[in-house]
Length: 203
Image 1: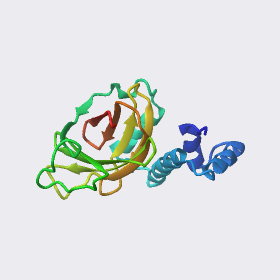
Image 2: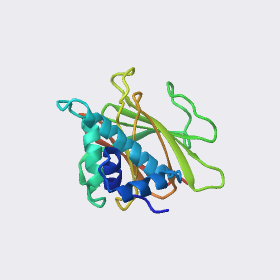
Image 3: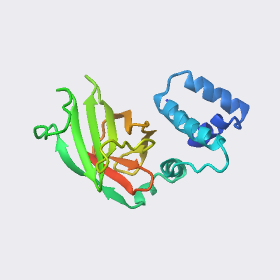
Image 4: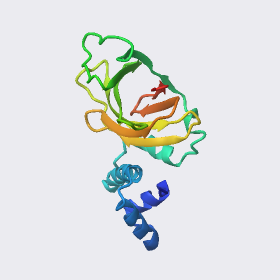
């Protein structure tokens, strides 16, 4: 299935695209394309922020996500960031004290880097190469503080962007992806360096 470009969806939410293209985009949405629905949701959120008072400054993470949308995918990852350390993997060790347990079919991986904790849970769909991922971004130094509006971007080992989404007000996010070796996740939060997670081989 072919997908529309980021520019088409950016114009779509603002109502400034060509009428023929807009109609084609509506028909495409009617086919229930998860990738384009996610892209439209991101641009819709950005458009809502832009529609507010002109003095409003959009959260830094959303601004950086917009830059990611238009940046060349081969060079987007050149930005310096923090490499997260894996502190727990349910596939290799028992649960540490204080970490919630997941179901037997779910792999739980916890990463940390300079005050940020990412609790990630991965589950492969039966008889499929598709994985579902659910996670939460937390501030380790403020246990009751969640990093809402964090931008989550999935890359392959060639630097191509595969997926992007935005965490909710509680720092929670979820997405699905097709299995590939050496996938990486970037987590973009306001006033912090980009956090980078290497997923490695999920088999």
